[in-house]
Length: 122
Image (cartoon, rainbow, N blue to C red; front, side):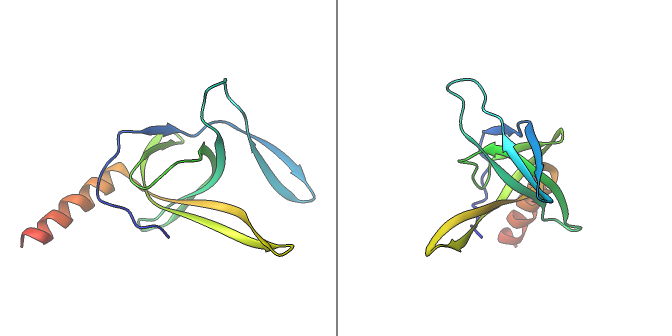
């Protein structure tokens, strides 16, 4: 998992609508392409890492979503605290299999920054 610096970027991404198609008892999610010039979107498994952990589902977000960025999922803002890429060995090559985002609510993120600063000062 990638570690994040304690800074808040000014980028805000909204999860775009996804199309769902079901084949062979597996759920496939395809990200719709937007207008020309928009960024390419990929599927991310999004979960909140602060206790209690909960899964927010699969959402389409820009490919360059990084730690510290603000994303909007289901109408709520979250800060990305970790990005994980999983690869699977297929036919002798490693191919990307899925991407996961660990997020915190913006209020929790700011509280954690405040507590870290208090700890450093003491």
